Image (tube, rainbow, N blue to C red):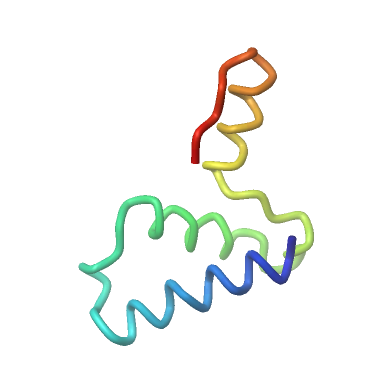
Length: 65
């Protein structure tokens, strides 16, 4: 999971470098914000979208990503 998270952060940072902050979606901004809060424990990182998906699954709702 950590490698996938870091790959997503790298993709978003590349997008910022190439296109600027205004090019980011709300989800991408939230992802970076969530990831930055786990600097000391990146292996515990779960994005807010993943948390919502888990909560929906617990409630029996289908999740489409």
